[in-house]
Image 1 (spheres, rainbow, N blue to C red):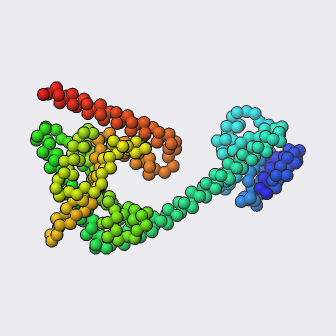
Image 2 (cartoon, rainbow, N blue to C red):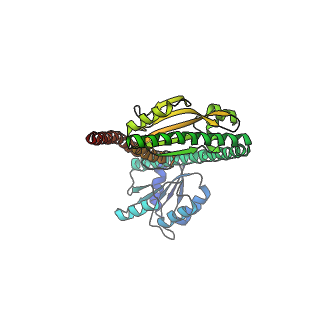
Image 3 (tube, helix red, strand yellow):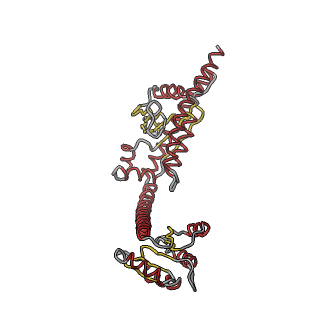
Amino acid sequence: MQRILVVDDAEVNRELLLEMLQGDYAVELAEDGEGAVRKLQEYQYEIAALLLDLQMPRMGGFAVIREMERCGWLNRIPVLVISGEQAAEVENQCFEMGVSDFIHKPFEMSIVKNRIKNAVELFTYKNQLEQRVERQTERLRRQYQIIQMQAEKLKEAKPFHDLMMQYQSAIMEVETKLRILNAEFSLKYNRNPFESIKSRLKSPESIYDKLMRKGLPASVENIKEKLADVAGVRVICSFPDDIYRLADLFIRQDDIILLKRKDYIKNPKSNGYRSLHIIIEIPVFLSNEKIYRKVEVQFRTIAMDFWASLEHKLKYKKDVQNAEEIVKKLKACADSIEVLDYQMQEVRNEIDRAKE
């Protein structure tokens, strides 16, 4: 049976509430704030709700609420003020201090029971949710510690360092090929097919985490064979047709092997994400051999990249309020960006035709 603490200096109110509640709850009574604090200290992990009068001798209701805040009880015990006070300012002050609800005098049994029931259920759910979050946070913390430890072991292994050097070299090969195409376009057509190139090499922590999620042991062989995005290059273009033209010219080169192509421009993800992804193998020329390494290359317009950056912040940002509403707004923005990209491309085409 859940325990309810009733605090009121008027005996008639205490007895009336006891009669209403004792069939459903174990009811504790106190006639002033000092008695309430003693009961809270004694039953702090058992009390499901506190019914608290405001005007009492020696220690009033507001002082009890402040003491509960100081002791950390207010976060887990709902306070329902029982009062004949009707002034909105008093109610607002109570809510600002953390009170859950008001029960006005004279008492109506159904209202008393329903408000207590609602407050208790809400706090029970809140406390259970907080405990689950704490447990999950602790599990993630321990998991991250494991990832860091394993990542440190990877860092210390010479074969891993050699492999990362090869992936970094593969990135440089990709960037060089793209810059040559850009220079050629600049000479032939007096325009550049892309605005900028960004590259990144996965950290040891990210590599180990991804292998773990795939259920694979951390080894150089698994990194080479099972992961396709250790090396990544992002190419930012001005217009959608530049993306396809540049990507086609790039993968047509005879020393590049196309492994996979995903077109999220023609077939966007459900959240609005748009980009052209290709996974390739490209040769890296070492002192004594030629080896092939995988690189993931993403092609986006400036607007697509700006959108993806904002969406990434939402994805990895914790405790974002109105997340569902933001997701809807991002989807609407993605749709607008698609229209704008092709409108700007058409404007460019009109300008080019006017020059002829």
